[in-house]
Image: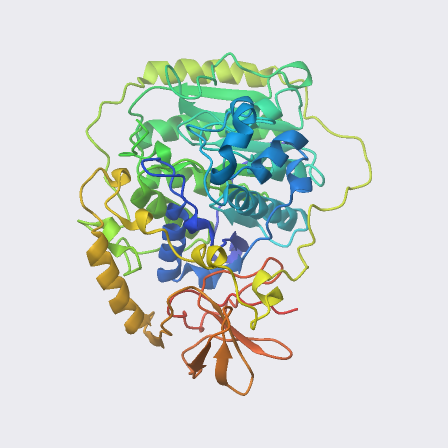
Length: 541
């Protein structure tokens, strides 16, 4: 049976579930570190201001617990990640060396919670796909493909991809993993190197480049022989060259392997101009991979990954969210909270550089021929014996909203309060933007204050913004009037016709943050208006 991508038209619009936790942008790897979780918040803000959230279900994922993480990672390693903090590093000196934590993978405040958010979104998306409650699941906070069973690597601590694939295998006989990050997806390949139930395909820079694995000759072992596919690339590959290898290789893989579900890692460090990358792809070339895989009409999990010029990361993942939704979005960027990052052109799409493409047609053709020969060695489409389906990693119907569990009259600690405020160092003139003074800290604060005091026009509807210093949950009784925030203070809130309110059986809930609890979609009707600084994040039971 030959599987070919179908044409995606308006009649075949996919149901998309999107996972985002508003805390994720607050975690900070440290001064000078290229990994910036803030990029995920920038992506989300751009998705909001393009209005894409109206076309999909938006969830705040549950935080993965240690029992879920140890389905792949060792108990000792997860316990170490759970317990280590910047203030007790000296107590874990030997373990830090053993688990490769310290330099590329630093210890920072909230490390374990960051891993919980990243893994929780990918696991939730896998469960949703398993239950056929969605066609495409998106978790841009995921894609941390370098983490090993008992070792952190390449800025990655918990391998959310492996965890999500293990979840998909409960319902699907064969899962295909595709990696378009510039770095080899070594952690995922290693995890499934000896099984035929997962095929890993990685397109990456090879040769004196991290992590140093991913040779053409790495094809798997044992039952997994020929089920690892590696396409080593040289510097400067452009959109046209990438398309000439991606589509033929994946087409052959789909014909030979016939997977039941696909996980696509969309690392944005393969884009032109990346701080750590050396490829020359534009958003269009990168996005064609998403579009091509979407056309196979299989359960599809999209995750993030690398990407260190953060303005381009936000552009790429917003564009690929639009592709998943089958939505055209304008090249002119909408005004957003991080508008200054995107200067001087303030456009969505980026232009390739003039760097030479060292991947000749002859070189690419030789690699393709070898890979096709390997794929012809596959004995048959592997199956699995019938057996009871294990329990899901989580109950997607469970109402999870940590804010609802908080007593509004109970004082929260300063540490908890600080975690809801952006680290000012993330908004400074940082080295990730090549020192071009894209963000002036003082100017940013002034602009932020102006934005907080003003009304934003969203898709022609004026939305009055409630000014708060921190992000907080506002619960408005159905009669209106005074609202109580998480920290116990009160604000006068006058709901207007332009505000979107999720109605529950006993109350109406408005949140000034931009996520919902796992288990309930945000309202997605076309005529609803965007809240001033986010979307409805409440849940209905």
